[in-house]
Image 1: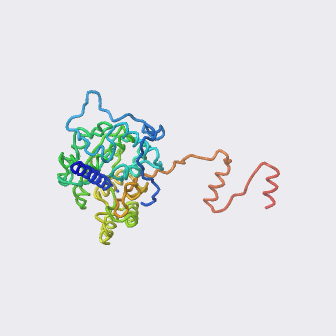
Image 2: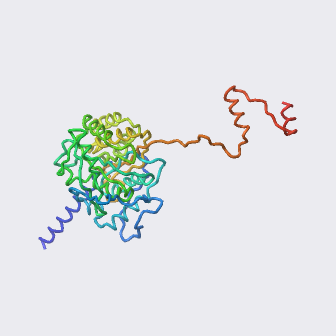
Amino acid sequence: MRIKACLIRAELIWALLVLIFVACARPTHIPATTPILEPTSGASEPTSVPTEVRATRPPATLSPGERIVGDVRSPVVAGQFYPADPDELASLVDRMLAEAEPVAGAPVGLVVPHAGYVFSGAVAAAGFRQLTQATYDLAVVIGSDHQLPLSDPISVWAEGGVETPLGVVPVDAELAQALIGADPRIGFDRLSHQDEHAIEVEVPFLQRACPGCRILPMLMASDDEETVRALADALLEVLPPTGVVVIASSDLSHYPGYDDAAALDGATLAAIETGDAARVRQTVARQMEKDVPGLLTCACSLGPILVAMRVAQGLGADTVTVLGYANSGDSPFGDRSGVVGYGAVMFWRYEPRDITGWRPAKLPAPSWSTLAEYLKTDSLPLYKTDDPAGAASSDSK
């Protein structure tokens, strides 16, 4: 009996450690309107994204005669961060995407969290939902190393594909090699990718929201300005001008109390919303100086956030929208005494409606000449009409 009790206790401790690990992998502005998804048991769920949500293109396919060449990165956190069963995973992701609100504009860049789906899935869905509003050929997904071995200092998975229970997303190997050739600080280190969760957690969302995308996954070991600029400049050198979304996989504050996290993350998100990468770096540095109890970092992937901002702007993004925020304390599994923050942010290009040549159908044509005369002379021309009643009225003034 004593042995059995010890085994049960060990299993409980292991389950608790897994739960903590899953919660600590997440990233913000602060309308805390995006709900945290609660786990379900036996509930009826849609098996696919509604037609108004699902991207219309088929999954990324290879050209005739083409095949995936090289290593495929296998999933390592399936069954921990997200369901390992393909049907269950597809149903869960589809439901979260369907519950997310679409906003105006199509992303050029995104910031999304990377924790377990019961903690940050709904916030991540708020970002990926926006990809269904445009056509993309490539998703650049950038994360930071969370464990050894580290990238040196940037590692792109340059061949084959990235696998989840939903299948394999092909890597754009040609672009990956061009990126490696663009800067000596960029390489291909399989070991740094092997056990890292930051990119893998995003891929099921990408597979359901943007099934036609290939992927360019990369890790950063440093967020110093030299490394950020090196990767941003290399990406802008090799990426096509359209059909690309750059995704930063990052959680926000780690381990402050619930209220402190809301304040810290609100400040970080507000800085991101300015579109000024230098301001984001300064804001994070100032907050880290405050000696907030429990605070380990304000953004576990600050480097990828700064790179995504710079590249999105280089590709034409001029507007920033914060899509949602929550922290692990909002989950029924969370402990509010020490939380991790999650935010979704979109960088996009504002395109005003083209009204060239447009005229309201009900506005008489003479009114346009009247308006033009007023704008030119700041006075209204004499109103002329063939209507005797109107002429009489005009003459009397």
